[in-house]
Length: 130
Image 1 (spheres, rainbow, N blue to C red):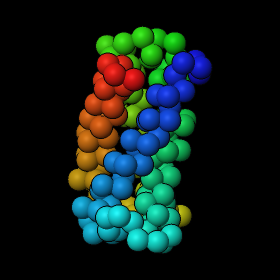
Image 2: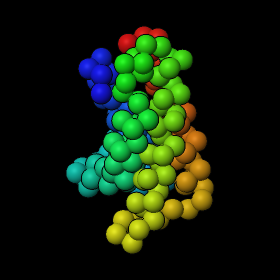
Image 3: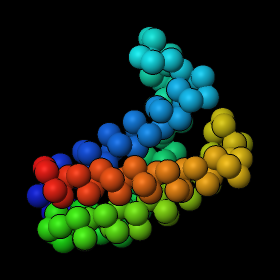
């Protein structure tokens, strides 16, 4: 991991957590703002499989390489190419009997597509303004 990419790493994790949080709000699993420790724990519990996937996939793909901080043209594709395997890992973890939630086909599509868009937009904004 390139030291200059640390802000990207922090931002990526925040974006993933916010993306999952918005999803839980849309499904009435938690409110806005999250009321209490149980709501926060629920959001974190939903996010953990995808955060594990991200921690595994992003460094392997090079999401935090020196090139990732050079431009949006480099950063956005690295984020999307990292999210796809990260989301697949997260979905595989959720498909196990040890994790609640399951993997409906629509959930998988939303995680892959909307997650890619969220990370891509964040990386674009970060490259332009941060």
